[in-house]
Length: 175
Image 1 (cartoon, rainbow, N blue to C red):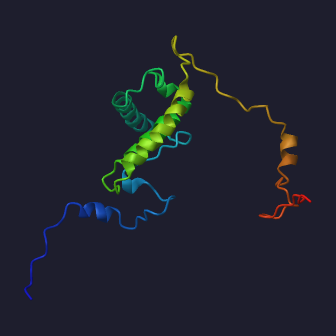
Image 2: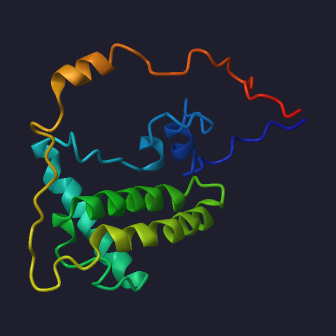
Image 3: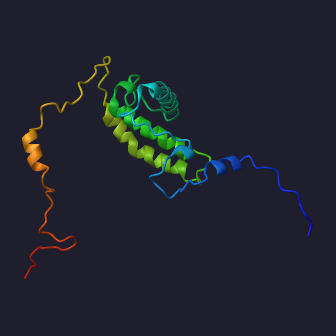
């Protein structure tokens, strides 16, 4: 046997090292190893807002040109429509993950399948509400709409049918 020198370092080993401890079957693990940074717009701190908005804007502008998404679906004021922001942000994250170099090859087709499901939601999210200039809708308010005493009474029970055994039908059999 001859002692061969070790092979030269593989630049892809850095990716493997970064993935150490990553379990691809864990659907609840962090997406950081794949380069995705999920944005929870509800809890996004102000000091991270500009970077998140700029990244999403760059992707939305690319996406709308690449996929010929009309202004009637994603208007220039898309960022003022919360439902559009959520849909576009989710598509952006899915796109980043689907086209990551560590993907097994099914990511791109999976992303396009998700896109076909998202397009009707995008149409519904906007539906041309700003055709004559931006008119911000008043957001729904829950203030004063729930009877707190009724709520407190309601939440004291699970409201499940305790008489029904799971998996057993209590329907009378036909004679």
